[in-house]
Image (cartoon, rainbow, N blue to C red; front, side):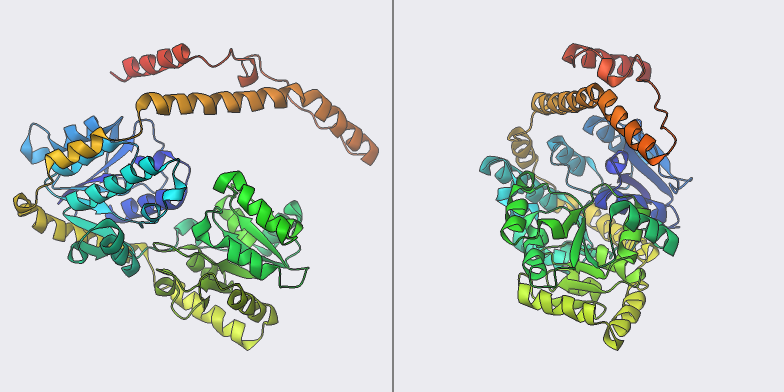
Length: 474
């Protein structure tokens, strides 16, 4: 079969969805059932080191390029199947891809954003997103999900049919399989001032992540116990989180470490007391498996896919129950044979998941989609419904460009402020080094063409760059 896999997220920093795309693409390249694998990426994307050599790379700028591939003049060159691996809510025209494809698979990671209007700037934006995702689900021949619990979301929250869903469980990223040395763990802890008496939480502080339950439980534990969050405060700029921590007098007992590398996350976990995963909603939830591989105890909420993933290899508690979470954390602190048995079950549980098995299930989903696609005239996506969804998209290119302009200006202003205070910082650094008898740090001069010396952001200058790039690409 000839598959067109939409991996347009691979140009972004490596995170959850990007990891899934990279690992699935690698394994699909090894499947004999796929005679031709085309992978669509944004033009200029740096391919991962494990990208399959036999795959054809299709560099695209937008929806029109993908439509061109699906509707090639030579019918024999058209893909048998198109795989949309995420919800492209800022590109509503992508709905046409499901209409144009011979057969289409839409990957549903979860429906969390459909259940949380408060995550959107206004009710109109949420209502459009909810309708957009429902139209994606209705237009697909098959729906690929990664846990049984997401099937319930498809039915209850997205209006999809249970019988059109196929489950392909995920696995731990190969970059996270091997542990780091004890020396590197100690070096990481010294660098960040950690003493080893801490639990780890992973992810941003969105309300559904359940961090508020963790703070309430932490307040009841001994004061020497801390929590380190490998993530950042993004919900309402962190104001709600900070207010909660101040109210519980926990500000000094919670550390935030955003932007960690894979090796740093491994070091953080390996040096910890355990992983706490209090989330109310997860479509799969890889962090518990990552901790289990490190022989780190896992305490997790009994919510959605988490019990399905963890089995008996984690100590579960009812979501939102701070007293139950506190009791589980105290079990970890007590140690002993129970914890050792939990660790052994964790290693065995994590080994049950593999990307090869995931790809095998994905291919089975493709087979089901091809059979459905051959009969799709009975349920072809309604073009008028597709047009209506696209027409009412609240996002406009000019608005996106304006938001991008503000981000560029903000970044350049911060850089200018840092550059302006550079000499004062260097003087203070050299004074400290002199007092300590340490060699003075040699700092290179600011280059003449540095960002801080560039002229003010100009939309005309940006447009010229875009035009120049388009001319070179012709």
